[in-house]
Length: 273
Image 1 (spheres, one colour):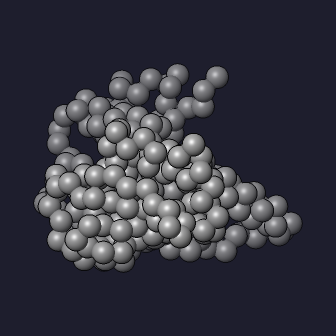
Image 2 (cartoon, helix red, strand yellow; image 1 turned 180 degrees about the vertical axis):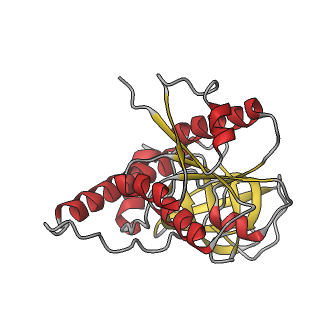
């Protein structure tokens, strides 16, 4: 039997009650957290979940909890009745207008969950080159998109020649599409680049990197769990997550360090074969 998808609504009982008819209990574990402390219990459980929170009223303690949740792999959906706020992008993976139509909001959440299942993401550093922008680094990778740090002004919808340096003298290239322009958590500028279906070799390379990085992360989590003190002391806090764009980072693992020299070469051999 497939695991239930956990959705946690923070501090909004009316919204929680409205969601009950849109998320059947056979498919979703819909829960309401009354305060930050209750959210912490979900984070400590170590299971991925989707957290729905009102961003118009964010206290410092809640901001810290949201960052911790995202580092642990949770997807944070921020609701707001106001305009765009630069702070929101640092706290939530998705920012959604808080209207009165609960059915429409529920449909947005289902789309986010579907996208997350369809295209997993990992945080790693991948050297790339953009025509006209020179050498750069992708800090979040999925099989179909990259978040690339760059100060160069690029227009959403534009086509940009992208090159991934596989090894000395070996490269994979394609014409990527600028999906979104924005800033990462550190405030550095970057772009989300979509990889077209026609660039099959590049997509296979990225898919392989995502799978390998996920394996490394699972191994690290297993070792951390095995090394935990017998007395049940809390594990040390996770390091800050790297830069990323809200449109790309649906799943945010802790920073995964990968030997990209070996990993990219191995993945490229499989992609080109």
